[in-house]
Amino acid sequence: MTHPENTDVASIMRAAQDNLWMHFTRHGAYQESEVPMIVRGEGSYIYDVHGKRYLDGLAGLFVVQAGHGRSELAEAAAKQAQELAFFPLWSYAHPKAAELAQRLAEQTPGDLNRVFFTTGGGEAVETAWKLAKQYFKVTGRPLKHKVISRQIAYHGTPQGALSITGIPAFKQMFEPLVPGSVRVPNTNHYRADEITGVPGMTPEQYGYWAAERVARAIEMEGPDTVAAVFVEPVQNAGGCFPPPPGYFQRLREICDEYDVLLVSDEVICAFGRLGTMFGGQKFDYVPDIITCAKGLTSGYSPIGAMIASERLFEPFKSGTEMFAHGYTFGGHPVSSAVALANLDLFEREDLLGHVTRNEPVFRATLERLLDLPIVGDVRGSGYFWGIELVKDRTTKQTFDADESERLLRGFLSKALFDAGLYCRADDRGDPVIQLAPPLICGPKEFDEIESILRSVLTEAWSLL
Image 1 (cartoon, rainbow, N blue to C red):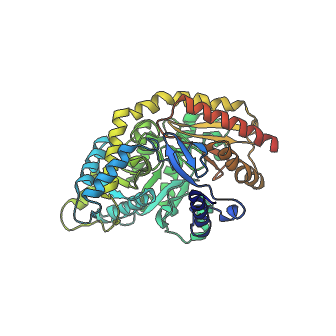
Image 2 (tube, rainbow, N blue to C red; image 1 turned 45 degrees about the vertical axis):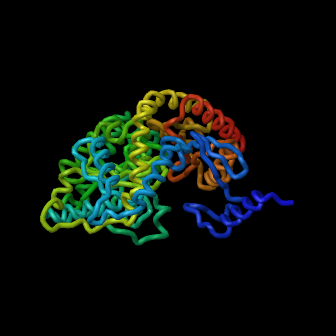
Image 3 (cartoon, rainbow, N blue to C red; image 1 turned 90 degrees about the horizontal axis):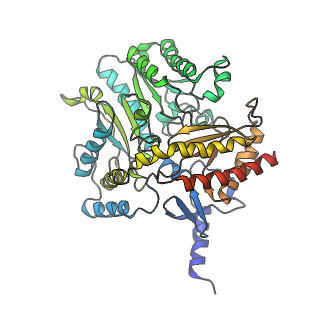
């Protein structure tokens, strides 16, 4: 006799195969094998449909800051849904969105006090570019519309955000995109020699050089045509590029000099990922706009936000000017309530302090892997790390396309998952393993991550 739960599992697995269209997924990979099905989370761990446990080394997708299974966040959602499940922010307000906007404004650097809610990060980036365009039009500089961003940077999938994204492979199928996007080098100091053509730059020298490329790009395009520079505090795609010392200070000066808005895209880096509430606080700069999402609710309900300085709100404050932009579910009452409960939890458990105290331990634990011949670089900040894999550590020689395909997609991702670690093996740039566990993790989880990586990377090297 078949157990009903087995039938249920079989029908769910079949539904995943037959009806679900997954994101950024090669469905061909699942023609011969089942789709991994995660059914439950608890703390820093997730469980699949067969009951197997995995360490969530990516916090879902840089999202689940407070860990899985936090009943107080679920309860905040249920309570709000019973009271007011939905109301839009189109000329009306509701208490939770107002309260959350005030709470965020208190936490942001400088005078970034105006919070425009979205439902996710790509929408927040879209919002920031649209605001930049309109702001300059209504203040008498209508030609300022272009955006500068960095090579291999990921800023989202909507047509505008995708234009700002610096990963050619993600864009080519959807071109032509929104015009006006210009690319500059990123802050990957490990590859500084080949990026600059100048061997042996110190991190400080490279930081200055990289910031100056932004100035050159503004000059080349014409300062009258450039509206904004979009940068992540730590760049995600390509594998965790932290800013070299002085980089953001010089970038701030350049943006001020040419009257260009500095947009800090903190969809990943805000809400404790780096040990600070916002990424600019970690690296001591004040942007004109912050875009954020993911960790604001620890993923318990979708929300995003564009947070702008008072100066950018000024033209909309009086008279008839309107920002003709919005989203049905932006600042959703349930999501806003969950975000407030999540920020309470941050304070109560001192998650920022926990990350700051444990960052050196996490770094040191991952740096133990530098004794493996396949590990070229370990870099990152807070609870956000990348491990770059190389064919030759001395020359920093990377893998060709076939080897990357075999190593990353053919072996590593599945081998790490089979060994009990959910993380990302990625080659949007050079082959990198990315780690961003829930902020509640500590030395015990770091050791588990290191030991799984060590055995799988050792095996990967032997396959080469």
